[in-house]
Length: 309
Image 1 (cartoon, rainbow, N blue to C red):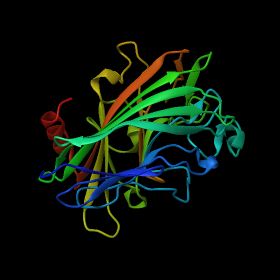
Image 2 (image 1 turned 90 degrees about the vertical axis):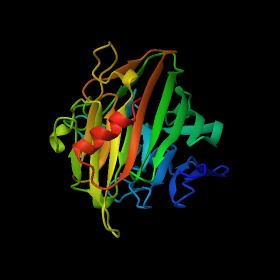
Image 3 (image 1 turned 180 degrees about the vertical axis):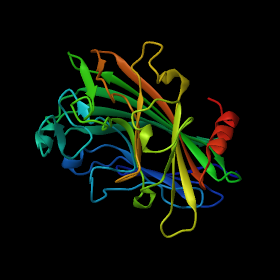
C-alpha cells in the first residue's frame, strides 16, 4: 500500500475512511443518532471491499434496525438496545417502545492514521428508554493489513463495557428468553440482500447448522448484485476472548444465518445469560476481514496463519 489511509470527519455525523491507492471508501462510521425505535447507536455502513463492492445492508425492509456492523444488546436487564420489536416468551415479538434504549456517542479520544494503521477510539454511554446511565463503553476500531495484492483488509473491534448500575446487568438473547436458535446479541454484521443463501464456512464444517456452534472463526461468502464476483466476510475471536469458556469466562456461540438474510454475530449470551456485576467491565476483541472473492477454508487458514494476533 502506498500512502496512509485517509480520515474525513463530518463533525456530529460520521467518520469516513478511504484507501488512497484505489480511492475506495472502506467504510463510514456513523455516530449521529437516528430513529428512537431503531435503538440509536453508532454503526459502520457502507463497508466496502477493496474493489469497491458493498458488503453491508442498512435499514432493510425486514428489520429496519439492522445497520451494517454495530455493537448491540438484544436483551439487557429487560431493555432492548437492539431496536425494533422485543421478544417475549410465549407471546413472540411485540412492539414495546418503552423497552427500546440507546447508545450515545460522547467523544473521540483518538482519530489517527499512521504507518499503515488507522485508529478510531471512542467513548459511549448505554441507556434504557428513560435515559438513565446503565453502562459506559470504551471502543477502539483499528483498520490494518490493507493488502491490494490479496484484495483484503481487516479491522479489529475492541469494546470494554463497564456496568454503572447498582445492580448486575444481565445480557441475554431471544434464545435465553425461550426462542430456539435466535441467540443474537453483541457485535452483529448484516450482509447485503444478495448474500442471502451465501456460503457459511467454519474451521470444521459448513452451512446453517453452524448456528449456535463454537469456534475461533466463522466466515460467510456471497455473490454481489450489480458487479461480477464474490466477497468473503470473516470474523475471528481474539485469543483473550476464550470463546469456549474453558478459562472460566462466559462462552461465546455463533449466531449465523444465510436465510432469510445473511448475518453473523459472535454472541455473548446465546444459550445462557451473561451477568456483569456493578463496576465490572466486559471486554471483547474481534477481527473482521473483508476480502474480494469466494475464499475457501484453505484460503482462510492461510490468511490467519500469515496474520497472527
